[in-house]
Image (tube, rainbow over all chains, first blue to last red; front, side, top):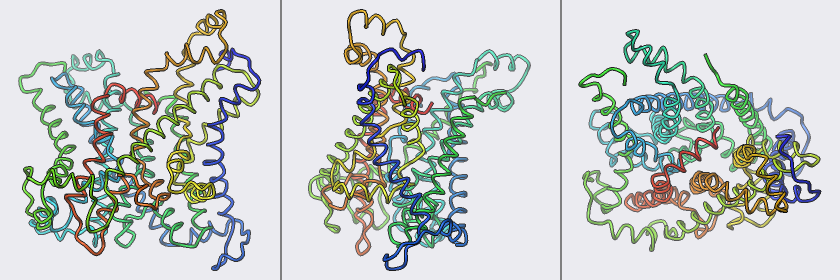
Length: 293
Length: 282
């Protein structure tokens, strides 16, 4: 970056940077700092007085069983969605990577859900799984399952996991396909000559060589499940029933909107911030260096 | 693959067809539902083939609005979504390309500080600073406005990083040649840098348009007036009727309309889309 600085100008570079910096400071840094500051404050029930309480809001937060419950929900939801969408994405990508006709057509037909908004994807599945009228719901009910995601927490979780996974497959497919196509064919041919069958070649050669892509995708998927899934949960279940689908992000938004607990909500925001910073740091530190055998 | 087997290619085709089916099925159901009338859907007897109500349903969705919820028609929401998506995409590209230009081609104090200031916004997604940001936008009188929908979302670390990456591959000789021709920095930007960046701008535009179109939490929070709603928000309100039967045919028509623009972009500009996606995530 250093030997490139070629133009001289005293004011011009600052003017060029000004719009981006103003937007960043006004809408990113200032609110983030405020969240941090509020997380150390305690307001009384009427909002009349405010007191600086150091880490009390955090301590309170970690005493609440519903916070641990939300952590649990987040872990179950993220792990399921990340695992399912990665596994399916990898399966479709490795099939499309074979020398078969129509790879291009399959690719087109598999990637477009990326463009569907999470909330819209959610509505598609709400319809299919709507008790009494949706096709899948009727099939489940006909086979004796008492399907009602509005009342049953596990079923609500299944609904949001299915919608989130559906939306994420295309992304993982695309990146896995790119990763697979970058693996030199000679390596695979060599293994074939040694007598390794396709499945064995996949697990002993292709999958290890794919690990940088996989690692990158795990991080990106976790970030996706954490944040973009808000729209899915909000439209499908509203965090319910009985908080069975209230993830950490959903809880922050919900607590801040209805509860007067400004400090507690801010403390939750700060914890989320720390999680994002960690995920981003991992992504940049390790993905840049490439995980490799 | 490597060996030749007569039925060896059957499996990939089979698996991929199943994949295509999984991906397409929910959307197919939405399209079918948008062509039937409410009663057929409500009693659970909707056939798997198109019905005859397509024109009425789409007309009502786009022009008239739902009856039960007195929501604004979707036509206006589509326009709002379009303005928001275009505004976010154009805004992000505009401010990022000039920031990257400043960072790569100028030497000035605090250059690295500026770079890091932009970079760190990557770690502050809207969800973690939602209420303070809401308060600022409200203090600036931007609730229920296009400025409020667009401005807070246009800072872009990703776009800046992408342009920076690309600018650094531009040979030094090009800059020197341009200088010998007597061009100042702005001339160089306009006559050399912009034309070279066209593909990158287009690829980024495709990704950012989709990003903008699909925004959910932010528009949900700052728009209260029905005529300022975007279509992705509108669809939630259509299915969220507590005292009445959901008008599924309208909800599904809305879903189809909400998907159409971004999906069309991915399908028809696939090359740019793939390039944009892979480069912004690198």
